[in-house]
Length: 169
Ligand code: S3P
Image (tube, rainbow, N blue to C red):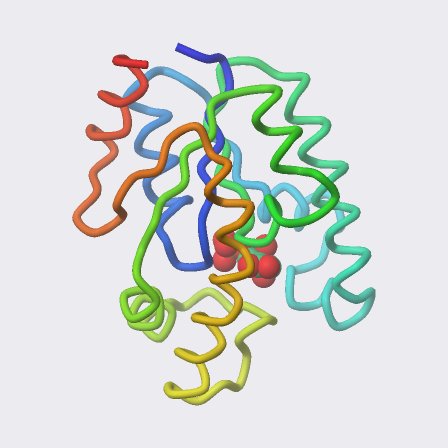
């Protein structure tokens, strides 16, 4: 089993929830990139976007990812945009196992509507705008997401399923 496991996928695909459970199951540490960025910057992700802009956020994301690649026995929940910027997908594939948690746009919309996490990219969107936005962005992002070593269906996905996948690979 590879020493670093990167969970990738769109906002709301369950990377953080599944990642922390998976880490516990396989005895790895869990890291959440957004949380690490927030701790390092001492600012929330929405504040980073509003005060510094997305480009700065992506640079900090890249810095955090580079740092994480120096550590071992880690499950990492990445931000939804990370694989699509600054060659981060290549970096992850070079340093670990990548798993894309795939969900259809409608399921992502439903989850994002229910989610309590504030996400700057979707702030203030109506339900129908949100679905169009997800479809358009997912179409662009899947070019990167599909470079993952494994692609799994996210509906009813359990951390045990991910652990099994890692044992078999
Ligand atoms: C983003 C996803 C968020 C966070 C930021 C940008 C994106 O993480 O990194 O709001 O570009 O898709 P989650 O995927 O954990 O929501």
